[in-house]
Length: 541
Image 1 (tube, one colour):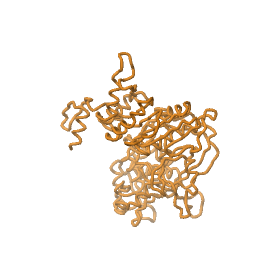
Image 2 (spheres, one colour; image 1 turned 180 degrees about the horizontal axis):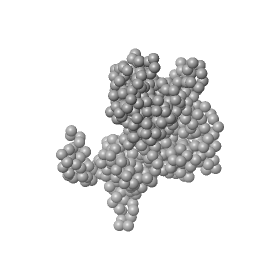
Image 3 (cartoon, rainbow, N blue to C red; image 1 turned 120 degrees about the horizontal axis):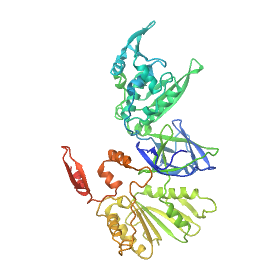
Image 4 (tube, rainbow, N blue to C red; image 1 turned 90 degrees about the vertical axis):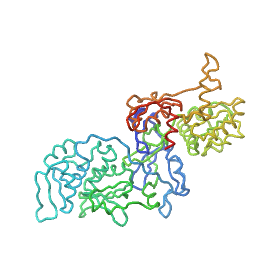
């Protein structure tokens, strides 16, 4: 985290790369805690770090700080049931890599290959594995072990130089470009490992991967996590001798997710589909403990995705970002007396999150700048200050804000509120704004006929020839997609490849329905059509 800066990329909880839009300075002397998970991982976080968790008592998703969870009487009850859990990440969605050794072949060698030679040992009943390797390399010799007719050793002379090139010859590990390869490439690597050193329990569907190298075990666990699986690792001695140990990675995959074997006799034993209860248990990590530790330097980042989550640690645990969009609201409440600020968000979860973001910023202010809080202090939807100002957050509805004397209204992602609700909400807010209240609206465009679109058009009609303010009193501010650091032509090409030109036009170029775009059909005919026309055309299919 120490080297991350705005413009860098991290991985989001959806498995896709996401850009860092803001990073705080490194902070010192913060209360820090070690958060331990059911699968053995630990993450160090400060007291105000935000986590998106599932409350196993209420089955609801919440955004809580480390400190909030610490206040809960029992994180794990007497039946060993955890109060909070975090969803596993989706498979990391990364591009194909140019790999020297086919990933399946590398997995086979890592599992059953000799560390210091290009020899692969194979059971005679599993010739399928060697046939897969022979698609890429020719076996220059083949021989049996003494007094053992059940295994054969295959020498692949050409493999030696490739093993040295990728950096695994003499020291088994999974190179980083293999760990950050595409889903199919990483799956092929895991299949090679599982075909050689893996086991599947036919009754439960649980899988094991047993290895004798600690570095390879850590890499394999990261590989399994990167495919969206939850796994845990155990260690045991062989013959009671400490240097001779085996590490076993445990996880539960299903063929409906990924076939982690190619070898038919193992593949046939995999479970096809999990029960709903079993599926939920394989897609979450429970928080087992939160332990105070000595303070360490920490920092927080803002990422550019919808759920504001990014992944941390080799197990890719989703954690929350901070945000800068609430900074003005906090400043306004702190330095103005007796003001009521209303945040109207498109979803209730987002409304609560706005308060958490404001709290996050407040807690990081120097003590001499912090205003005091009212007796009620912080709660999920509001905060009050001792200057009689307060900030409220609600999900946008027809009646949101009725009965409040609002000084400042902030509408978050207003274009994504249902059109009829937009109309009713705006009608209910008109009297408040007419008596001197101010309003800020931020949103990506979403349609060309809703209230947000109408307000945007009105804001772009100047009151006078030299006025920046629109005819409806709003000042239009458009943030172009290439203004944040690191967004260039390459970024544009990569995003269009991922989300398509139609969504790019809306999400990044803020185009309206009458924007003309050039598209190509399946017969390679090129023609021009508006976004609105294309939208209706797609809905008709």
